[in-house]
Image (tube, rainbow, N blue to C red; front, side, top):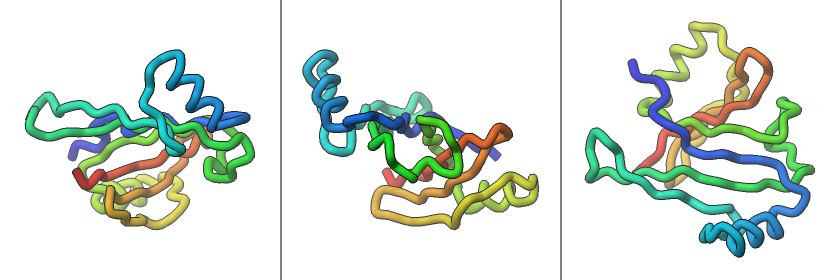
Length: 125
């Protein structure tokens, strides 16, 4: 079973997310919104399929990355989140919540060996 298919996003804390968005827009040309920006790409195995990688600054006071004390969280793309969640449970991986489904995909949060919070995302492309 293929587990991770790519990086879905880089999420990080910032003193001023709006200013950070503006700086990256002005100096590096990112097309930002209040949610950061999405980098669109095509899958190498099937170029007809699009994918995105999200770049998003969060307020430095966000509780979203807890229980990790890190200033970042990596989002990994996966193919079958339900099957992966079952496998991770059997492997005694710390699972922080239940799978949540939105119109753009399914999400689950886990902790790695050093307590870094990881977001797993099965996109609905």
